Amino acid sequence: MASLEQLQQAIKNTEGKTPSEILEAFIPKGKTVGGVPLVDITFGHGLFLSNINHPLATGQIDDWKPYDIAVALFAFTRTSKELTQLIREDRLEDSLYEFLDAIPMDEVEQSSAILIAHYFGSMKTIVPMDAPEGVKAQKKTRSVGF
Image (cartoon, rainbow, N blue to C red; front, side, top):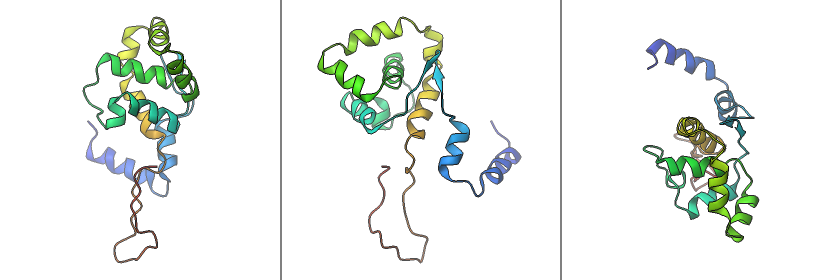
């Protein structure tokens, strides 16, 4: 666990940085899991995860089952167009298991934190857009993360 001094230094280092710059520092482009490169997450990936009721789509980031990790890894290594095609052709499950046969189990189990960070790191506007206290903003609705 980080000490108070380390946390204060981390806060100081982020002053003046945009959320995107901070995320890039922690989640650099070109991330791989098990030697397989992860793709940029799109709205299509979010819909895919939502349709299968994946823990990422429901906001559950604790206590993932191995299958949850496997599905996220599989989804984040191909485009949403490829995922849609596999579903239409009824080849999703076969492709998933074929893909996972090439990845050692210890690398898959250790990848949940990377996959979660990769998913949430793709949401560049996740911070609610509230006006500072006492200032009237023209925008009357809150951001929902997109």
